[in-house]
Length: 490
Image 1 (tube, rainbow, N blue to C red):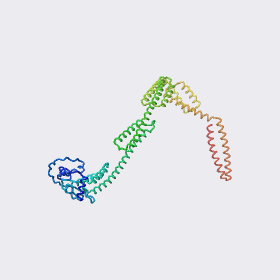
Image 2: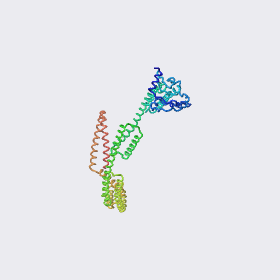
Image 3: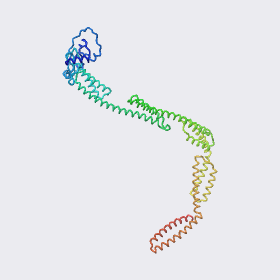
Image 4: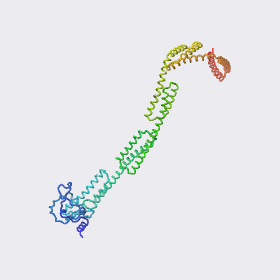
């Protein structure tokens, strides 16, 4: 069997059935970018014909004379990798072997070869496009599938061209896509790590807020922050990177649990706060009732003491709500103000009544201050006693002047008392006798020390001289002090 016969049998078993005359004579149309002049339209591929049903036998229609096609491919380059026969059969030359790629009947050998070369160029165009996508680092989602598809197209042997070079480019593309995929995965993991950290931060802060002591937490601030965290979570769910269902569900359960705990603590806190406010309100209303009962009392001293006691109880009582506490304090303060205003009015009336007494006591104070400095102690004491008697008879003075008047008289009394004590100290017989006895004893001791000093000097004993001199100087200093004290008694 000849090579031509083998090719014919291969075509009969692997390609399309016989092509009707009207279709086989259809002109080949070149791609606009490849051919500057009109060319016959390309015939359907063998695979397309294999899928079509056989057309019924019919009289052949008149066919227009075919237009000469201008090759749009480099036929010299195409001839390196394929050849065409007169009947339109085209063969691929690959690794020293020929593979039938199909038939283009009713066309010249160049047209047939150009048709299948153009199919190879279409494959190369897809390879080039994929290389450009890889170079531009486009998403690799379907790149491996494209490489596989192009490799399958080259493996189908339905085009003419440098298949080995194209396959080598696909191998290089496969490696580049793997590297790009790895880089994408690393970038994705880095972004996922950032997103996961952001979600974790939201959850962790929510858990931290939920774990705060309900008695110490600032509910207004914390509630606002918890709402913000919830909005952050919804935004992350809406526009953030997907983290995987299991991860997202786990984080959401933690976040939801934190919000549930926070809400439970808040409800419990405010429920207890309402109870505490009610108890505080009842306590302070009782204090207000007591204060209002005292408001009309004229027992000024007793009522004032009771108000101090009620105020101490008020300060130690728990606070009600701010609105209630302010209103309760206004009522309590109103009762106090009513009492103290009445007491002030009474004191003002008394001050007006005691104004004449003040004039009398101011004159007595001037008289008492004239006793200083003291010249005759006994006469001064008698005069001061007379002033005291008249002072008591004068009666009370206004409250605002009481401290000033009493302090002035007290200064005169203190000066007379100090002079009297000094006089007693000077005239005390027992003290005088003790001073005289000490003076006599010290004088005798000094006389003895002088004799000891003279003997030591005569003997030339320097140690005894120094000792006697030191003792003598000390006794003489004591003598000087005692003599001064004795002078005070003379």
